[in-house]
Length: 393
Length: 101
Ligand code: SF4
Ligand code: SF4
Image 1: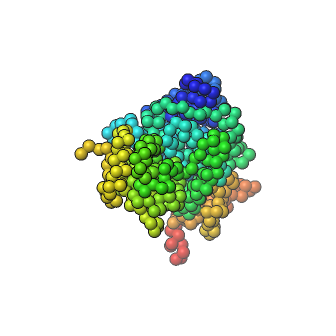
Image 2: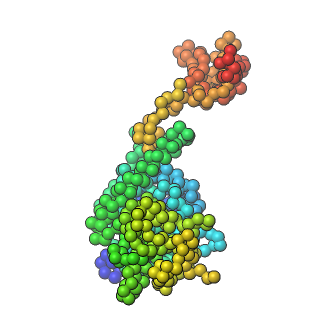
C-alpha cells in the first residue's frame, strides 16, 4: 500500500474493502478465502495480526461455516462482517436467507465472479443474482472508491434500528477487485464517529432480557414474519437516501440509488451496473463528441429496486439497452426484468432491449458498447430477443 | 381453545421470542388425535409420565406427591405416557370416538 499523498491511497477494490473494514473495526469477522475475494481476507488478517483491529477473527473451514458463524455472532449482538465470491456465496446460500430472515445487519463485500460450471474465476454477476430474493440489500460499486464508500453506507443502513438487515457490497471480480485506483480514504476517527457504537435490539448475550432466536415458525406466524421482512426492506429503501446523504457529508461524493451520465437530453440509453458503467461513460464521451445523444443509467441499489425513479427517468427515451452481466436461462436476465417492471405503466414507453454481456469475465470493450449504441440508433435489436454481446457465432 | 392469532404489526420481529417461558401460550392440544385416558385406580404415582411427557401436560399435586391428571390444552396425544407407565394406567382413545361416545 503506497501513499501518494495524505488520505489518497492507491488501492485495489479488495484493498479498499479491507481498509474500510479496518476502520469500521467490527467485533467479529468470520471468513474463508476465495478468488477473487481472497485479498480482502488476507489484508484484513494482516491488520488483525498487526494488532490494528480489535476484531475477533474466526477462521472457518468453509463459507457455509463463515455465514453460520456470522449469524451466531450477529445474534449475540456483535457488529459482524465477512466477504465472499462466487462458489463461496453459493455455498453460503441457505445461511444467507437465514441472516436476512433473522434480521441480522451483517455487511459482506461480494466480489462478483461467475458461478461454475464450467469452472471460471472471472467476473460476472451470476453469484449475487442467485441471492437476489434472499432479503439482503444489494449495492453495486463501479470502482474501488465506491467500494470503499459503500462499506460505511452499508454498515449504517444495515444497523439502522428501523432496518436491521444484511447488506452485500458488490464489486466486479478482478476488474475492480484487482485494479489499482486512487482512493480517497477518510481519517480513522471520522469513520469511527460515523459508524458509532452498534446497539443491537435483542442480543442473545443480554442475559437480563433472555430471548430465543430462530424458533420454529409454522403456517400460523411464518407469513406474518415474512410480511414484516418485506416492510423492513421497504424501510431500508426509504432510508437509503438519508444514509447516503450522511456519507456524502463525510466524503463530498454522492450516492444516489440510480446515477445518470449525459442523460437528460439522451435519446438512446444504456442501463447497467458496476464497472461496465465506467467503460460506458468513456464511450459516451467519444460519441457525444461526434454529436450523438447517448447516455447512461447506472443502478447502484439493486435490492430494494428503485422502480419509480427508473421509470421516471426512462420515460420518453427512444431506445434503452439493458446490459446484464448474468443470464437467467429460459428467461430474461434480472436487470432487464426489473427495468421492464419499472416501465410497464408508462404512457411513453421506450423500446427496451435485453443484452447479456461479459459472462465469465469476457471483456466489455469500448467497441462493444459503441456497437450497442449504433444498434439502438439503427434500430437493429429486437425487444423480445436477447442480444449476446461479444459472443462468437 | 385456539388463541386469537396476532397481526404482523403486533408481534416481535423475525420470530424472536422476547418473553421467556411463553411456550405456555402455545396450546398444542389441538394437534391431538388420540387422548390418553388415565385410570386413577391403578396409578402408583411414580411420576414416570410426568417426567417423560414432552409437553409438561401431566399435572401433579406437589404437596401431596400425587399425579392428578392430564392437561388436555397441552397434551398432543403422543402416547409417551402410555408407553412409559409401569402400571399401564393410560388407554389411548381416539378423539373422534370419544366425541361420539
Ligand atoms: S406413570 Fe403411570 S403409575 Fe406412574 S404416575 Fe403416571 S400414571 Fe401413575
Ligand atoms: S400423550 Fe404425550 S403429550 Fe399427552 S400427556 Fe401423554 S406424554 Fe404428554
